Image (cartoon, rainbow, N blue to C red; front, top):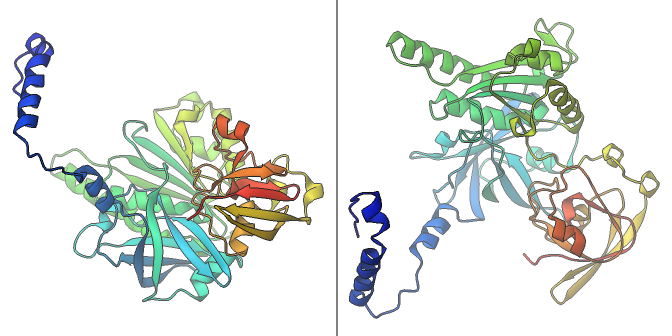
Length: 416
């Protein structure tokens, strides 16, 4: 059906004409029911939920990190934004668990004849899931995952064109995706990355960042030479915390360095969005810098912060609970299981150890995928990223990834 625009008054007053046309179309339609929903079918095809990915390539991204290339078994990769993450469904030994990793590949790389996505995992210390990827996952393996998730991406309707990214360690991965997308001319913003590392010989994705910088410079030089407007730019400033031979910036990502490279020194604060991804200690320091600089919350965006492995880092955690173990009764429909749960680990970790499936994504208490109900007992809810609704707090609902047992518990979790 097509409707011709006649003018404001005629169109506003033409409701009866449109109603008549709709009635005529309904009367002339087939009497046979059409239960299918084409919009729903299209949405399901674009975002199929869980799907299988084949590991087609594993390459070093630094001495302590590796990049895993994944190609979809069904040939389709759901559309995503640079900065979002993928969630893996894993069975490791007797544990059933999920883990999320930011995509280090760019959205444009998921298009074309041979689409793929990549994740980059760092293992500078032994840790459960990174150990699994480094020691057991090999090329040719098939992994189950779902994507995309997360709100940590550039949105021109919300964010300033000038973006300053503050990253530490493996927190660089979402910005690698953004840098690649800008270098390919698919994302129009200027990205300055202040990247904190320990040693210059262990910079995660250092070569990919340098390649994105070069590609932007060459592309913009060609555009300017042709008399055209330049596109987005990428600039990377590396900061080493423990490298005496490093000739660039040293120490940590401080307020002084942020102001120096974002043009905010001397009280002049241009229209800039600041984005952070990195460890908790760095987040606290950067947050203080943002407050001191007068950066409003809408201009400071950060990725979801996973709960720290050491509960002593969580504000308000009762340290007398460390080392205690409680009895956790898990209700799923009519089934009940009783398992041990340590007070200094999230409820989700106890469930995973017992091979009881719980669908976690962010592991920081924000996304709500692991939302569960507390039937009896007491818990400590981490204030770091408590994303519960007010009604959930009042009615005894909690997020299993960020809540810790303080007594024997009875909880009801979703069936998956």
